[in-house]
Image 1 (cartoon, rainbow, N blue to C red):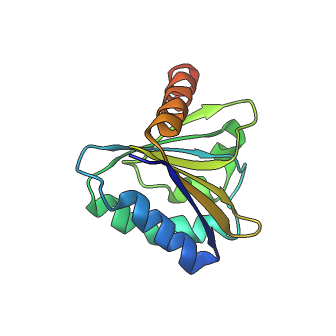
Image 2 (cartoon, rainbow, N blue to C red; image 1 turned 135 degrees about the vertical axis):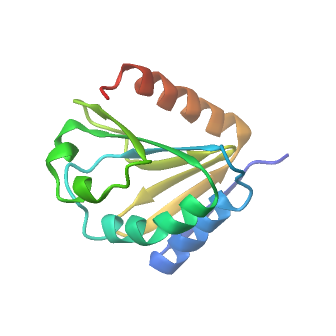
Length: 138
């Protein structure tokens, strides 16, 4: 299979990017993500809150790595109990979602995403995520 990349601009377009990531997902697949913000983000937080029901309907296991400061945020209290979070006290690389052979990197300031479909690239980021997951605090 060939690797591909696409750019998504705007909230509707980002919704399409997330739909693309989740389209082939099966129950029990692990959605891994980094959320680098210490607090609720004016664009990201409402987006993810609206999108959660669709993610839940797919039966995914959700694992997120956030900064320790996020525990004190308003948004933290809104996170559903079935979303597994772990905490680190160092900067994260950015907002990234990894599922199977797809990696979505999002800039919430400009509401732009880059979706990379590549087994090799996704596996590198899965390994990176899992390494941090093992050392992150519960």
